[in-house]
Length: 292
Ligand code: C2E
Ligand code: MG
Ligand code: MG
Ligand code: MG
Image (cartoon, rainbow, N blue to C red):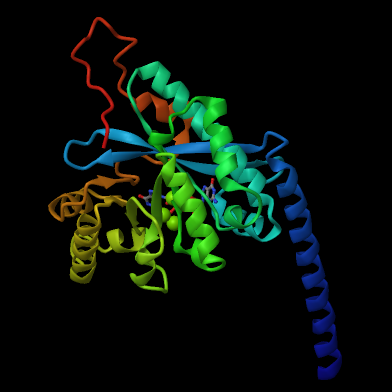
């Protein structure tokens, strides 16, 4: 009897696996057409200068509005899109959409604004990411010097020379490169020698332990010092509390993002926090969005 039950269980299990596989295949198929079906959305989270609380720009974060599942967060589809290659089409769409929005906001406010867009490793392997970026800049009129491209050290997993060449080409256009989730990787600091970068984004896991965590504070202090030595900017990710904000300001961290300031929101909502100068000539003293 035990044997029979075991067998049954095995059958059920195998069925479950087949089901899971076909569910995943269907999801991957949906994902392949998501960009062209108008199902993707970009949400925007401000980057804030800690010294005075000014918004210096936004990070573009993709969301998938699935016809049956509703709004799907990137953790649930970016890894799969990376696996299937769908991320190249999605990434191209996000880039154009974010730059179009950034250009519109700059025209509206009359002030420069930074836009940060995440790139996945696959975009450096398939196709020509530099050509895609140049095309998006030309199409939208967004200035290259206001664009930041965020990569994780995962881009260096394969074909380091080719990735470095592409990053150098992007930087020669005036685009800035940010290393995302800095401090979480495996390779320690040595890859900074290879990876051309302008900005370090301190991973949320370190910020989370502030203000009490002494090792977090020590680590952040060394990242800030390292950045200063190398001439890089620093952005702290995931600031949720006033205590964290204060600790980061005391540690001389220049810029921050996090729920404390704003969550990622659709453009209509995110744009409201932008100070307006040009459209309100009656208030000549109104604050401008300033450069970093
Ligand atoms: P990331 O680039 O490191 O983005 C930061 C993530 O932290 C975002 O999650 C953001 O919503 C979240 N976050 C911001 N402030 C806080 C905070 O105070 N507390 C907490 N708990 N979380 C905060 P999101 O939007 O779910 O994106 C997750 C990841 O998905 C991103 O991490 C990025 O790696 C990837 N991703 C998002 N959009 C794109 C995209 O267009 N292309 C690619 N290739 N990857 C993307
Ligand atoms: Mg990012
Ligand atoms: Mg990050
Ligand atoms: Mg992250």
